[in-house]
Length: 156
Ligand SMILES: [Zn+2]
Image 1 (cartoon, rainbow, N blue to C red):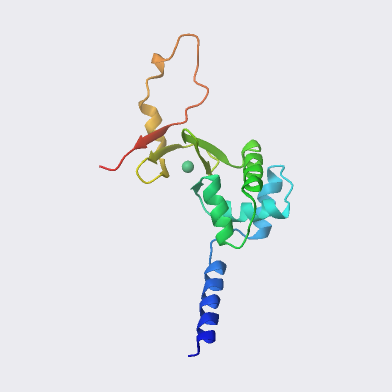
Image 2: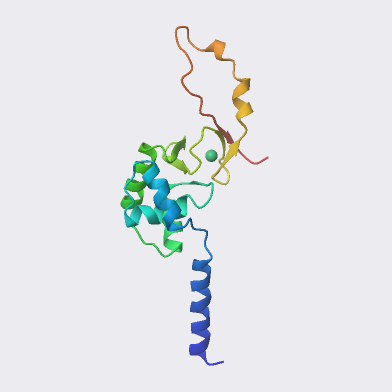
């Protein structure tokens, strides 16, 4: 095999891996955005197709990299603008794990999380966790508005 053919084959394989990436179809992404009152611009659609293809927890930087791997190069500011709008419209959940580290959760239903500080991974945990909290210990004259638990763990 001549070297030029070998280079072509490699490039072809790279294209295949891009096509195989998990993406929500454009029609579903558009429907999802419109159902939350979000105008589906081309950039927002690109972001939504990657973000809502599966249940995932990503930082803005991780999402930016995923988009890039799918052949969509957007500025980090554009990614932030879109996801902040998705959060504002309650399509996306924002989860603060510690100083300067915020995750975005494509599952917008109420649930709790576990953050592994060793590997930086955020995962869902059972709602039963909240049932063990003694709310009678809260200050008098207050009531629970919401409970969002993030348990920080390290590997044993
Ligand atoms: Zn979650």
